[in-house]
Amino acid sequence: MIKRYSRKELTDIWSEENKYKIWLDVEIAAAEAMEKLGQIPKGVSSVVRKKAKINVSRIHKIETEVKHDVIAFLTSVTEKAGIKARYLHQGMTSSDVLDTSFNIQLIQSGKIILKDIDQILKVLKRQAKKYKFTPCIGRSHGIHAEPITFGLKLASFYEEFKRNKKRLIDAINEVSTCAISGAVGTFANINPQIEKHVAKKLGLKVEPISTQVIPRDRHAFYFSVLGIIAGSIERVAVEIRHLQRTEVYEAQEYFSKNQKGSSAMPHKKNPILSENLTGLARMVRSTVIPALENIALWHERDISHSSVERNIGPDANITTDFALFRLANILDKMIIYPKKMLENLNLTKGLIFSQEVMLELTKSGLSREKSYKMVQSYAKKCFTENLNLIDVILSDRFIVSKINPKKLKSIFNYSKHFKNIDHIFKRVLK
Image 1 (cartoon, rainbow, N blue to C red):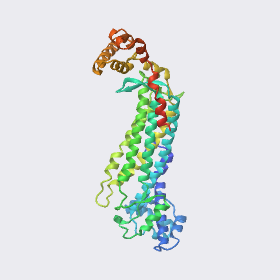
Image 2 (cartoon, rainbow, N blue to C red; image 1 turned 90 degrees about the horizontal axis):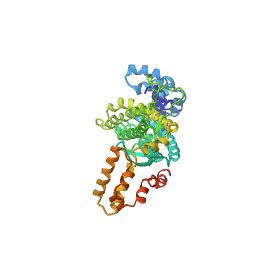
Image 3 (cartoon, rainbow, N blue to C red; image 1 turned 30 degrees about the vertical axis):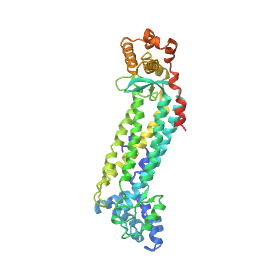
Image 4 (cartoon, helix red, strand yellow; image 1 turned 45 degrees about the vertical axis):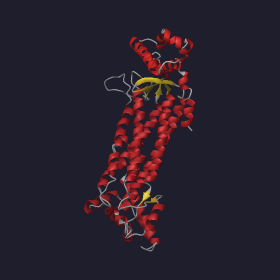
């Protein structure tokens, strides 16, 4: 990922330095187990731990000659750790190191992304409570529907990110496995107890059955969850973008004192951060299909998944982290315009109460079809001629004979739409 959309915490996880450090941790843990089983001399793991140094440039130089990254790594370690390092990797295959280490990087990333989600939840909870009873129009198909509150809108996002947190916890658990089972996964040249020791040492679970690789359905699940999180990020971002449109202008991204919106038009204040999140969400979701396609490898293993994961591993995690961090900042600083929300709520001059008028007519004995047709015809008239629905309804003697004027006027009131807000909030903000 480019630095513009990266945070150091995540880029450090996906650095070459950290990758090789994890490889070394895996090899040392395996060596410890081999020593206990008497398969290699005592002291190998402690010597390697003490003397081995990660030299990324040296590993790369060796790899240009041997054309194999794990061999290059082991050769570099041996150069520093000495002759005892020759006992490393006994009975192991490259995927034992690569897959176990890749899972650790995913876990490390996932834990930071969980913290990002916690921050999103914290901000959304605070803002939802603040605007719990701030009236605004609910829209379906982009068209005014019926009244809601801005807090309710935010509470919906909050509940969604609660689900995302649970999904990510499940996805981290899914990839928290270790495979040290040797070529094609049969333990022909390595004791299963070594795998058990490495898993415990590194905080992982033993992979119940591997081929030569850890099954990629686990990873597909993890990246799919990142894709869903990206969708949730975009859902919030798109809402902010719509609400900041000049014709709507119910909310706005924070605009700093010296910020510029357009190189040509000094009046512009554009929702650039939310638009950026839409783009970043697309990038994260684009990693899901390759992750799914990685599930089907040839026989016990091929390396068609390898180049994919070298790309999507860092890209998807780094981008998700950055996008969540940015979203939390947007939500924390966004500017809300309650007066404009109320103005928009009244824009259609009572048309948003059409359902209640129709329902009252059905209660008076009219069929739903006739009630609907009658109210719809008046709604069209009001919209075309810029009239108030209550005035038009009150002028209809037939309707007044069915619903008394006092009852009719009581329909055109926002309060009843908010009578269950507390009930919804109690279900969501537990």
